Amino acid sequence: MNWRSALPVKQALARTRLGSEAATSPEAQKLLAADADSYVIALGALPMPMLHGDAAAIKAAATLSVKGKDAIAASDVKAERQGNAVTLILFFPRSSAITVADNEVEFAFKLATLNIKKKFKLKDMMFDGKLEL
Image (cartoon, rainbow, N blue to C red; front, side, top):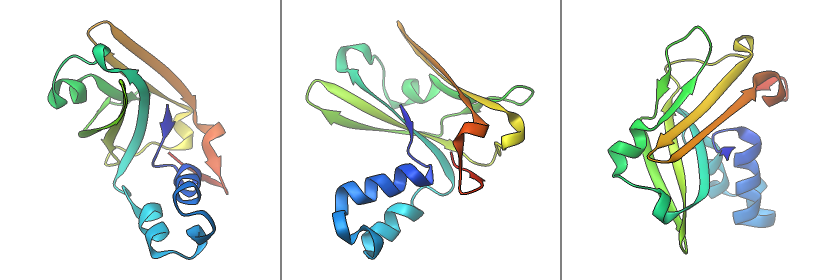
């Protein structure tokens, strides 16, 4: 599981895809600017048989929660298939701002027998003095 919308993750993906051209390539700039209006979490690789349901059911199964605030529901989902496994790319609207003062955010995903919860300490997600989610 990783925060695909976090700048350090985007930079690593750009370097992986583009190598030495990552610093100057227009394609790299597109990768870095992508999904600015969403928190993006990649969850996987999950065995295909564990994912029961359509995109609407999968979206409904995922939330981000901060203590004292309403949970943020996933607004979109995409799947990246790798053989018999799939990585879910879950999008959450940034309209509900998460700040370092919130201390912690919890990702939860519950679909049939699959129940995943992960808490992230926000102070550990700072990069160059900025919270990167």
